[in-house]
Image 1: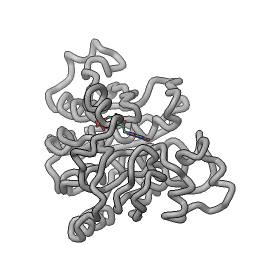
Image 2: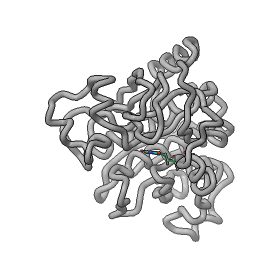
Image 3: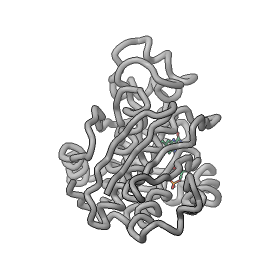
Length: 281
Ligand SMILES: Cc1cc2nc3c(=O)[nH]c(=O)nc-3n(C[C@H](O)[C@H](O)[C@H](O)COP(=O)(O)O)c2cc1C
C-alpha cells in the first residue's frame, strides 16, 4: 500500500483530543480523507466500511464533550476478527487525518441511539437494545453489521481543556509500557533486530481504550514473524472489545515494517478466544 504520510512522526505526535472547535473541517481536507479511505489497500481481506457523518454540537453522542460537525464511523460484523480489522483500518484512517492537521479520538462508548439518529445504520430495532446500557454496539458478539467505534474529525480546542483531558494529559496520554514489558518471552529482547525493535516501538505507542496496552508480542520463524495478541483470557472491566485495540497495535507494527522497506505478509486468526495477528517479513 502507498502510505502517503510520514509514519513515525505521525504516530509520535497523535494524541486523543477531547475538546473541539465547533467548526467544519475544510472541504479539501475532508475530500483528501474520503479519497484516502476509498483507495486504501490492505494486506488482508476484510468487510470493514468507513462512513463519514455529521453531528450536532451537543454532548449527546460523546457524553463528555460536544461533537464537532465532522465524524467518522468504522463498521463491520461483530466477530472478533472483524472488529480487530476495524481497529487496524480505522487507525490507518485516523493517522492519515492526524497528518492532515486534524484532531481525533477513538470512542468505543458512544450513545448508540444518537448515532443511529445521525447516521441510520442498524438493520433492526432490536439492535438498539443490544448496546451496553445505551453505549457502544453491544457487550460482545452480536447480529449484523454494526458501528464498532467512532471518532470526531476536527480542530483541537485548546482552552476548552476539560477535566477528563487534563487528567489523561497528566496520567495516561502517551504513557506507554516498554517493549521489554510487552514480550511474551522477555528473554527474546536481545535477539531482536533494529528493524523489528523499530516496528515494535511504533506498536507500543498505539492508542488503546483506557490506555490498557493489552497487546503482547511474540515471534515465530526465527524472528521473521511478529505475533500480536492479548494474553489468553484477558478481560477489562470497562472495555468489552479489546481485540479492536489489538488490530490498532498491529497496524502500527505493519506501518513500522513498511517504513523499514518491508512488505509484510499479514494474517488474522482467532486462537483461544482472542485474535492473533501475524506479520511476516
Ligand atoms: C478502541 C478504543 C476505544 C476508546 N474509547 C474511548 C471512549 O469511549 N472514551 C474516551 O474518552 N476515550 C476513548 N479512547 C481513547 C483512549 O483513552 C486513549 O487512546 C488512551 O488513553 C491513550 O491516549 P492517547 O490516544 O492520547 O495516546 C479509546 C481508545 C481506543 C483505542
